[in-house]
Amino acid sequence: MSGEGGLGAPTRHAINWNDPDFYDAAKLDTELRRVFDICHGCRRCFNLCDSFPRLFDLIDESDSGELDTVNSHNFAPVIDACTLCDMCFMTKCPYVPPHDFDLDFPHLMLRARAIDFKAGKGKFFDKQLTETDRNGKLGCSFAGLSNWATKRGNALTRPLMESIAGVHAQAELPKFNARSFVDQVRQQKPEINSHAPAYGRKVALYVTCFANYNASKIAQAAVQILAQNGVEVEVLYPGCCGMPQLEQGDLGRVAGQAKTVAGAFQPWIDKGYRVVALVPSCALMMKFEWPLIVQGDESVQTLAAATSDISEYICDIARNEGLAEGMKALDGGVTVHIACHARAQNMGHKAAEMLRLIPDTEIHVIERCSGHGGAWGVKKDNFDTALKIGKPAARQALKNADPYLVSECPLARDHILQGIEQTDNTLKKPETSRHPVELLALAYGI
Image (cartoon, rainbow, N blue to C red; front, side, top):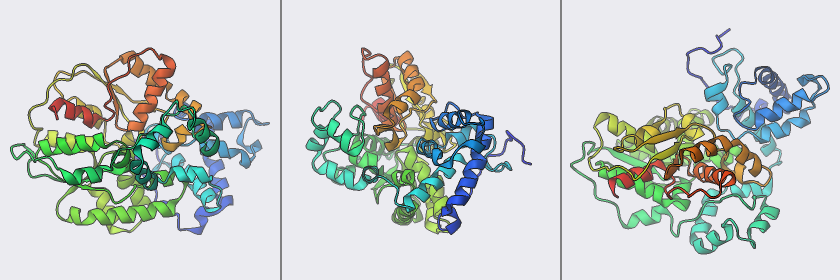
């Protein structure tokens, strides 16, 4: 048997979603029981998310106190509570492959959702929330109306959204840009600094649906920083990475998105461009999830090898050529939240490493889950639980009381702010920057 707690890196199996056995409910139940029994005996992941407390309570409160007296129909809340953050697989579980127990809890929950999705059990409005491209285009086209309607505190629209769509009335929702970033950047690109040490580098920037439709300041900051450091940037957005569909178990849709995006980037990779993603969830999909879902596709494999997270890429410049001069200290300290999907990339605390390049600026790191979990955390049934899970992160940010609070996942940052409000609503809100690259741009004065 492979040793528990070995030094070898976790490995993952391909997701064989085209195999009929993948959708066999009886075989799924057998595997769920095998894994749940091991998890119940171990309990190392008890404080990561709500899946594990639900599982342990379900078994502990059964007639025998063991899994044998738990009805399989009661597994649904455990499966629903998994946000696919991968933290159990990457940081806690001692039984992941190559251990002989061969546990991959998140991908097992994904398999269960895929079976439900294929059986048509998904909720209509949950599916509508995943249509980020459609929603983004509509939201940008009517930005004023969209932002008014989705604003927290709107007594007319938010209760209606809660009752019809199941989105909690108090959950902070992303605002929409007046124009997509792709449309904005067509009009003006910053001049490339030919004197920068990294002059000659080339990047194809994957804007991501969030930066394209909801937070163009992140994309603008990234483009300006890269140009300041001599990097030629080509901005691309072929479509969403499919993470929202992954959460629903719609693996066919994810595979289609992977092929579309990979095909769009292939010509740029062939010309020597490195691909950089602005949001860690998207980078995780491109680097790790897509190759497991779309097996044998050369363009997907090539894209995975060519992709970096934005913080990871800037740190690479700093380590190899060195960053362009001109950064100045910020007017106060920074609390940076390391997003779960950044940690799952197994690349270290790149956001904190990048921010420490800013002169004379104190950096505090939060390495706890924000509790947001993508669309999961804004739903009526989950919002209070999401705030509870994120409470340690909110308390740490509150204790630091830095004028800047950022996260590699801007939605996580907003959710932490809601947790801070719930703990102490008299605290002065941090500055509006949401992503670490915005602070680097601020330090450069751009």
